[in-house]
Length: 237
Image 1 (cartoon, one colour):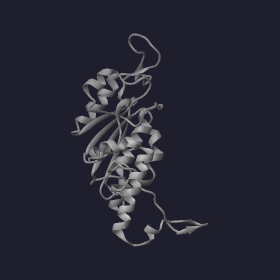
Image 2 (cartoon, rainbow, N blue to C red):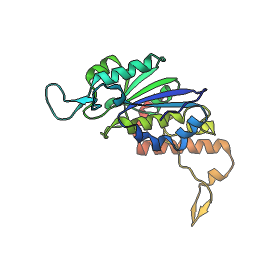
Image 3 (tube, rainbow, N blue to C red):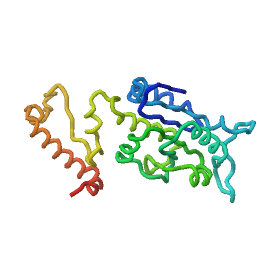
């Protein structure tokens, strides 16, 4: 997959063993819209294209023994050297279970950058020398293990795409998402105002903008305390 535009806000290069895994997530919804608007450029790089091995192998057994396979340094180094010979990258990110836990603050920061590389981990991980000499940031999307970094890379890409100015029609929508201010979003309602006796709170029908803002903040605080109390520690006094 090679999506190109002459004018764009961000470029993301993804190094992966399974480029086909991105065809669904990137061909739909927000990411597709960002690409079509020329605001996001995505390039997928098959790691197997950077090995001279006739079997296109990119992994080997770990030194010292043990179960599982390890991604070798040489194909990764060749791919990164090729990419960096063409442009400067703000971050080279490795998707790994033991990386920094990804949150909205990290997403907000990354969305201000122009060129990113996402390296998808696999098997038992990558040769440690890749992490020592090439990687500038390591990210985990949660305290659990998935089969590879492709799904994590798709999550990160989607979260960044929606933050690029001009991607979402209503610019205030992304700013009011959960976690933007370390609070969960308040409850939301739409028509009909009364469904089988289940009614929308009267305050939302009042048209009183100040009172509605106060109600939403109150509900956000309540929901955060009930469901994610740990987030309250990040809110300034």
